[in-house]
Image (tube, rainbow, N blue to C red; front, side, top):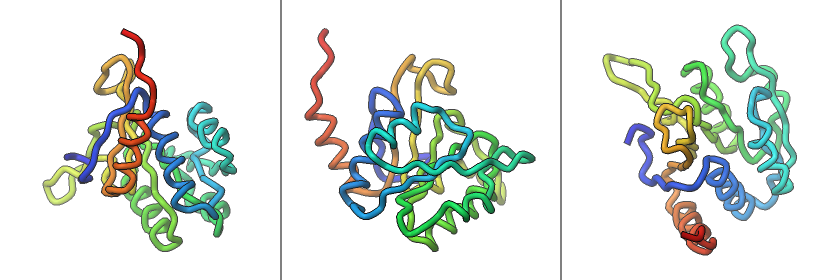
Length: 179
């Protein structure tokens, strides 16, 4: 509800949701081979993209805000860019909004990593605007030490029915853990 997306699906970890998303996007956009991350990110997230044969570009952060440096980012965006992974950590909504507009203009996907920042918000006209509302896809983690902890777990929200079906089909084809 807070992400303002139609579909939400759980997975065993955020990285699993991210892997499934990247598999879907590679299939949907076969000519796009690059993904941009904030240089301040988990190595495991970057490895997910690398293991799926995507070229990873790292954009530096703005040292005064901790958010993606827009000038750095502009140098990295090109015709092969599949998407930008925006790690929500320091509630810089204006920075996220600018990057969302850039993504829309360049026709690339805006993926919000909301692992650390789940349920954070800012006020605008006395209304709460939650983190995760700008992304085409928003990733969540419910691992230990998160705002909502289930010891492990992840999820993804979006408005893309085709992705939602792809995700359900792929997850249902995986083997279950033994009891």
